[in-house]
Image (cartoon, rainbow, N blue to C red):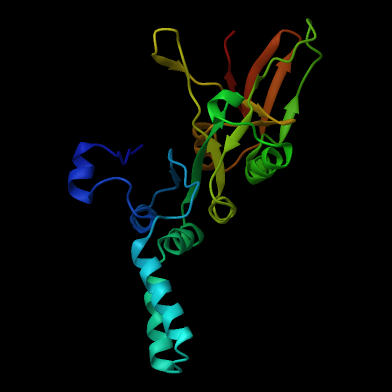
Length: 238
């Protein structure tokens, strides 16, 4: 395992945060070329890249159109400049051509207060649909003894832009739960969003690394037993 860390050292060499999407695209290209089998991102690409250069090119193109300048060479120059400056397109292309499985990260808002405002059902459904391709495909469950659901329920996910989510191999959450003293010692192996159960980024990275064996959640009358990944059983605690 190799960690490409966003820290003081990398900020010093690569420039201040946030980095343009083209930098993440270059990272995918390098890791894929060097033989990585899986690449996981614990950052979320939820909005379009803030790109002043692309905005300048688009403004110039609008001015050319308004002046009715018909010059094929100028049009080709604008199109070429726009393509080179479009960092979102660079990331999308890197996701599509990667020989490594790229797993993008997202997180869950666990309650309405975490969002700061109320989301309507249509918006929540749209967000859930954006991550639906990466839900647990199988759930083997028994009726709980106390009648209560054993799963941690979320309010709504905060996912990636649809074009990135569609191009990635999978998307997994990196939502963590801290203990009362503020330290993080454990990770939920499934979180319920709507009617479905979703796996974390770590589970999906391992799943792709192992060749995508059968993946399932198992529960009994007393709660969640764990995750079944092919012949491997990942047990949960109380």
